Length: 104
Image 1 (cartoon, rainbow, N blue to C red):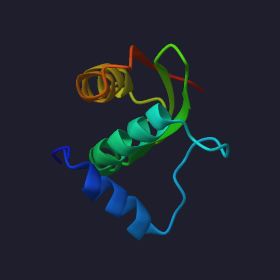
Image 2 (image 1 turned 120 degrees about the horizontal axis):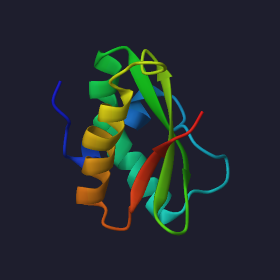
Image 3 (image 1 turned 60 degrees about the vertical axis):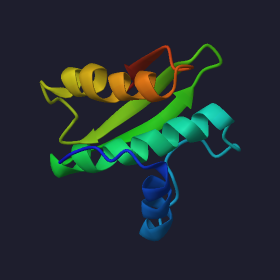
Image 4 (image 1 turned 180 degrees about the vertical axis):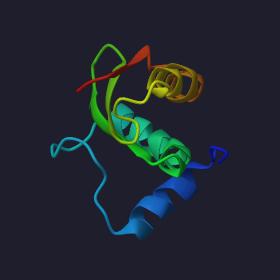
């Protein structure tokens, strides 16, 4: 499944789903929200393979920490998805992002 590129579609999909965005309960920073919006564009491709991705933290120095769920846990391709899919997309669209890490 191709990754969408329209942030308004991602926001609409999130609000239509009726579920709260994953992540900390504190009010998100602007960069946190931008990363969350980008993950909403990527999420359908990950879900198509039976997995999911949760935004855990965005640090002040631009490191993004995510957590894989479902089929992504233990998948040998999770590293490829992380670096060649998620990280590449985030760094292209959000230059403030310096790296993406998977956390348990």
